[in-house]
Amino acid sequence: MKKLFLIAFLCICANGFAQLIQIGPQISTNITSVNTKNFSSDHTNTGIGAAAFARLNLALFYAQGEFGYAQTNFSVYQDAIGETEFKLAGTDASLIAGLKIIPLGKLGNVRLFVGYNWKNYSDISRSNNLNSVTFEKNNHSILGGVGVDVWRLTFDLRYLAGLSDIDASSNGEIKTGVTNFSLGFKFL
Image (cartoon, rainbow, N blue to C red):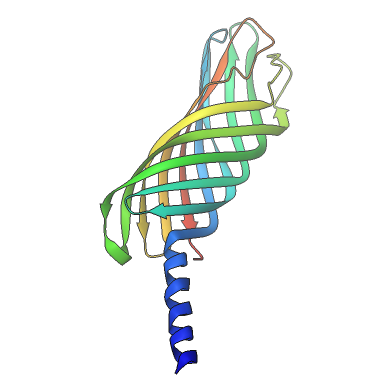
């Protein structure tokens, strides 16, 4: 009888722990635009990413950490020089704090969140050498968005506003603005 109570207690604890901490993979696609000062125009392009996340659930609030690899593309045009497309890729980490605004019980919830994102661009390539940009490899952003959890799936739509001038060595300025859509799966 003691063993039966012990097994029941362990099952209840494991279920409670699974509700408290959730982990899993996520894939994403993004649209990157840039705010520039020394270029006459810029164009948005798409990129992709993959990450792992861990979420700590506390009643209506949650905290989430993410770490992965992301790719960003954009192009800039300068009068009398031409257009250059840039492809940046590297590690990506986010810290998020959120609020479950519409809890749907075991079915899922609707969430609002804010946070911080850090990118380290380890792979930088350009389509030509017309526009000389010396990239700052670290990019810091603030983010905000909305998410929906349904069963074990998690959908997020977020906007990352770049704080760092990634063309720090010149007189100009390039800051990224990234709209990101991600799909994740919660193992726990």
